[in-house]
Image 1 (cartoon, rainbow, N blue to C red):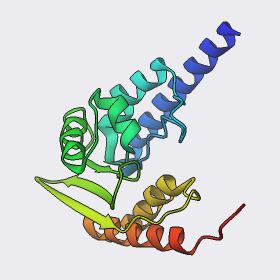
Image 2 (cartoon, helix red, strand yellow; image 1 turned 45 degrees about the vertical axis):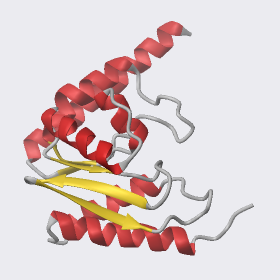
Image 3 (cartoon, rainbow, N blue to C red; image 1 turned 30 degrees about the horizontal axis):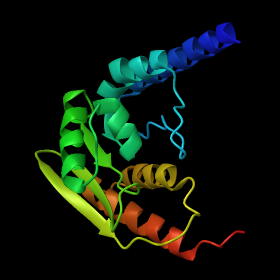
Length: 177
């Protein structure tokens, strides 16, 4: 029912706020994968939760790792090539994220991720592996970056290692039918 959906949206928004408060209390560098839009394009967060994300969690984010549909939803712009990913990353930094890694898996051609950190932009490219078995690779990439940072790698080295790890995982994944 509509009432139940509204209650769930309020609960999700409050969860986002609670995570933001906890991050503020710990001061730890948070790697945040927004997980706002399903692989098929359906929104996973209600507007109230997106607003809480933008207002409270985004400003506490050390590294934001949106895919193309998420970056488009957050910035309101269309992204069809890596140059547009760079512009979206600048907008997301202006919204509060300290660093942004735009994941380019939804683009055609080579799989190019764009990292905006400090004052510069770096691209991480890998050959596209033709497969339909990529569910969860964005979350895996973000987790691998967080693990690299926890091991003491700087951000660029953590992204490089994570990108290589996920590319190898996709290449070596069992082909399910």
